[in-house]
Image (cartoon, rainbow over all chains, first blue to last red; front, side, top):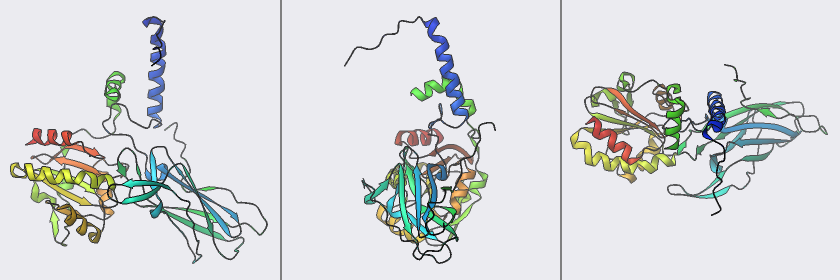
Length: 180
Length: 162
């Protein structure tokens, strides 16, 4: 153990810093940005569509790319992840390997954290067509709760042959709620 | 501990959006759901007891983790007026084998995904599981918990209400 940093400032001097800190904490708490609500017995948890943000884009005329952005402290089950495309177009997902987790009840399960990218070949090229891609997912928070299976959808337009990737479409665009 | 101290210091407790406890559980007690055998059960039938209503599901690992505790406490305190009631956010064919495996000694009602909405009206705003409320003998919600209940918190709450 190294030496403890000792404060040289007098209590009078430190007070403004504490007050500023309290203000910052209050502002963050008010904006819902603190992961845990101070003073509450329960952790402040994100709704599933924010804990597991789904977005996708068309890479080319025959390939979609699905993306889950998983908030810190949350995880998704690999075997509960499913993608479907409406209009009878079949997307064959090859899911990347997850992290093996030994679950007391479910045995060995694979989980995802952070960002998950999944390529979805949609078969024959169907340029200029609009597709609805649905993602079913189910996950939990390390805080000790699980969310029911959730479906999120995005509408994508497949680009013409030879055209680059389309823009990323968010299933639940972030709401700007700073002032209400 | 630190969070509690900080909460006291900043006075943030007043910012909690939830309605104060205890509050009437009339809506919950008036709910009727089928049990695992398909018979309709109204929660009102347990009014007068200290009722622990636990929303759970077989796909929810933390829910399964805490249920053996409920079985033990039902055994210990059932005679003194404690009644556990499960509400499964699940399908009956998934619930039945699990209830058998666990030796569940209290009824679990089959709520399907609609039960998630019921739990939201009780304060489970993020709609996650497990979610548990304790109803006192007068029919008021006296305690609620999102996430696994600590055994000592459960026992303390029940002893206070018995």
